[in-house]
Image (cartoon, rainbow, N blue to C red; front, side, top):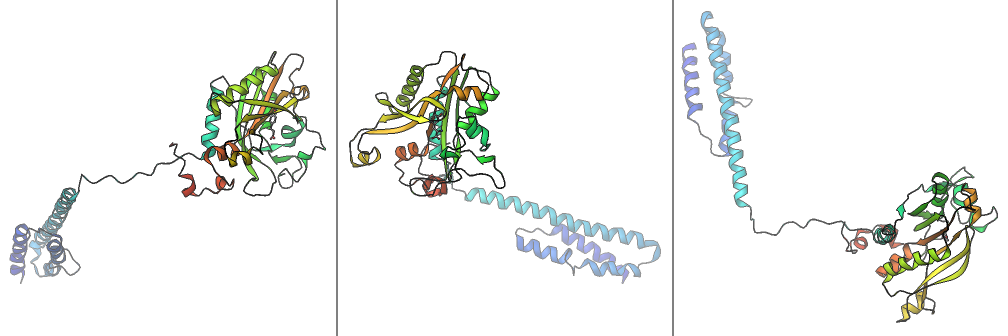
Amino acid sequence: MADSAWSQIEAYIAEIEGTSCNDKESLEQFRIRFLGSKNVLKSLFGEIKNVENERKKEFGQKLNELKSLAETKFSTTQSELKKVDRAGAKQDMDMSLPAQPYPKGSRHPISIVMNRIIDIFEKIGFVVSEEREIEDDWHNFTAMNTPEDHPARDMQDTFYLKDSVTNLLRTHTSSVQSRVMTSTEPPIRIIAPGRVYRNETISARSHCQFHQVEGLFIDKNVSFADMKQTLLYFAREMYGPDTKIRLRPSYFPFTEPSAEMDVYWGLKDEIDYRITKGTGWLEILGCGMVDPNVLKNCNIDPEIYSGFAFGMGIERQAMLKYNISDIRLLFENDVRFLKQFSTVI
Ligand code: DAH
């Protein structure tokens, strides 16, 4: 019995060496025969007990050699077949097919308009200043000369934080003015883009969150004429070189005198009549000379320094530019809407 076991080993060695598997199926057959759970080598291992003692070790070694021969044969054949597979796949590839379209992101219309405004002011030396959206009462209202009983302070308009009488979601980017003035020595020349919040009923025309860009210029001898020239430059960059502007007297607690700026939109069609209420003029921003009280509140001496400030909403400008009729679309993040704005990242 042991003799035939010896010759069986030789026979298997010869068989393994002589086998060539050209496909996965024949390799699988090979695996089952030599390495599977019921492989043919198992009975040979059972023969060890019948081998005479002095040759047991040799027999065991021979069997182990046989087993590792089978293992090596299997793994080398397997990796060769994989290589062939990959080469085949390459050959099947059609290099003339158009590439898969790569989805390009696009900027949000609010960002496009905001970046444009930032660019325009950066060109004349304004720097961007970004500040917190959760503000305190002092920076949002008190410092900005907004008396305690001012309607803007009413709970109706302002979102106060839960359990807080002082912390709120800023109602305007004017809060950045007080932040910057209390922490920076003049001259100051900043623009502050950002999101603001008001407790307003959401409709096609108004939302409880929106965006503003604030501007602040503080230095010695800053005049109303400087403000007008700066805003005229802005309007012409933004709306075209022939744009006409007008400043109408207005009231804001933090500026004195205060004004609102309109650009001439024209009355070409019915829509122009509607958006300009029949006047042809469109209100773009609020502005004015910084009230001396605001400077004092922020530790800037109004006898030495003066300045102007302005603030504008972004949503309406974006809606006009892109003909968007419902403000809610700007906050819903529906990709079908957003991907229409062609300016790519
Ligand atoms: N903060 C005002 C608002 O939200 C806009 C504004 C008006 C800002 C006049 C200013 C300004 O800086 O001078 O309605």
